Length: 354
Image (cartoon, rainbow, N blue to C red):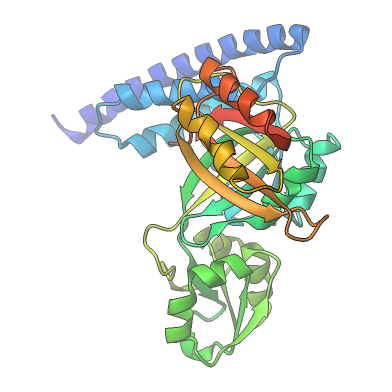
């Protein structure tokens, strides 16, 4: 079979894909009308999780699972935009890793609002200027993002969803020549994640703080002797050359991001719940708290502590565990926990990131 005949077959496939896409969009539009009348949410994480999981299971190639998922994320986003164009705040500016994570989760059909700080992301959602926010919560190399944890102590926002994304840091500069670099603009988190590479290759370079990876790239674009640790997307946005890709110390460098909003998610079948609590100051108090989870067979995936900042040596504990707040065993464990702690706050149940 020759090229022209194969191209004709591709054209017919494209016609069928277009027809089915618009048929799907028409159904989504009708669902949007029903949601408007009932006041239901337009973004439904547990439903989208089920769709993407089913597509992944059914995929037989030759397209990779990631390629198929990327296509369907944007199909979901485009169809969702017919129902309502969702506004998403993110820790920016544009081309930051949080921005890339937001686009990965919500697709091209959302409206994105950059925020100068993690606190500003929470504020945008709390004040109704954004429907959802995207914030980093944990890096596989350097651990928890404390600013995000601290925001949950005071905020009434809930976790709607999560996603995990591999992070590839690049060294960017105007010239692309490492010998011309005398200053390095960088946000604190990526600098720590690239510490060994920077110490080996930029030992005598002056380090200058930046508010984010994108802010670092923007500053480097104005400085012929400056460089930035940022994403390849930032290089394209700010017309910078990539001096070196993959300068992170660990090749398994992933960051977990949270989608925050005013509602939690319904069951998806593969869920995680996050809580925070403080305990009474007595011997064995934390052990007693954790015993409730063991008793009901609940798997803890994360436990962190943060000072309350109200009293010396008083701490709040953050816990992630497998299960949904609607699960009977989860309710029983939390009932036992609440009876023994000073206060307990459920931050949300949401689909587990793939």
